[in-house]
Image 1 (tube, rainbow, N blue to C red):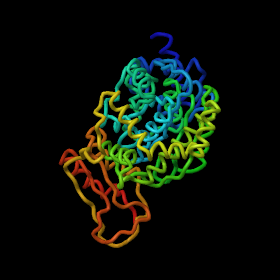
Image 2 (cartoon, one colour):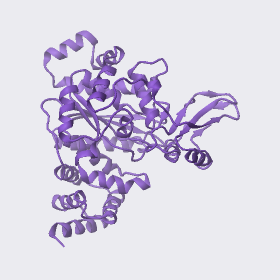
Image 3 (cartoon, rainbow, N blue to C red):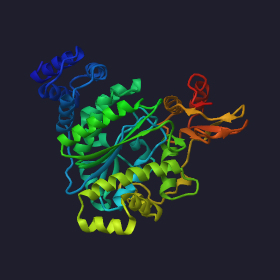
Image 4 (cartoon, rainbow, N blue to C red):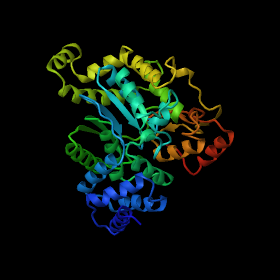
Length: 424
């Protein structure tokens, strides 16, 4: 057995009994995982040790650094923007909207996105409906040079490879430790060359982060890491009890994002507001480090960064920019939200009494959507007609289940008994 593997094994033993790891320990573990020398069982032990014991701030720094150093890195000049959500809230696909707004504003925003982990679909799964997301390093440089932005899968060319392997061993249990979420996000941001980042931290009863104290702790850890890597970072904490949009699943979620970008009458306004808030905050921290002439011009024309983001969206500039990005990534830019095809097998769940919707269970929504076939079946998922606070009459459709496979639909429908998704 080589020295590096022995160091990695000793490090896992140390962590399992609650001891703190040094950089040599952590680098050895990440290196062995990245080169697929540790095996699934030992990788799972390491992931579980972090979930149960947690990591100190210093260990988080070492983990992030080691994840970046054991993979490929991108290098861009100037202000490089990025936005990331810690996830856990299905049906809230803001990234295509934010990337399009920020890129249209003139800032570079190479977006590394994940596939599904704790939700039915990740941003990469959704963008794949419109264009390929697996790109070489050279291709990403060309796309960003041409359009200012991209939305690609971070695992496609060895960016923080240890992270993607750890994600795979965590996926069956539908969990990520908070510390692992932080390291995963920050390693990808650093590897992609981002230096101005907004982190979306939703919290609520049925999402990944359950209370405000945990959300604030996460924000503090993000800020700590950002300072250590010379990144300007702004965390945005907000309570979330339901999807911002109405669709859950790759086609349904990307359709919602397109409706906002195309400013369709049936667009989800909650999703639009969330996206403008994220884009406005990101443009704001980018403007802080921009030439005075640009700051003055934005203040004169739009009042502030939020006014600027709103203008870019409302005038259609953001949609045009996303079309450019789609074309550059090899997709068809002549898209329309209403032409995307959902699964042909459907079930409408109707109310059997009058009442008011009190809650939507994000965890159960995720379980049902996965049973329906998401994310591998792009057209599978759930569309909600009623959300929290909406009054319901007997016979009203609460939501529709979609699947590309009749057997998935049958299983999803039957599973609603054990995993109810609407609470009255």
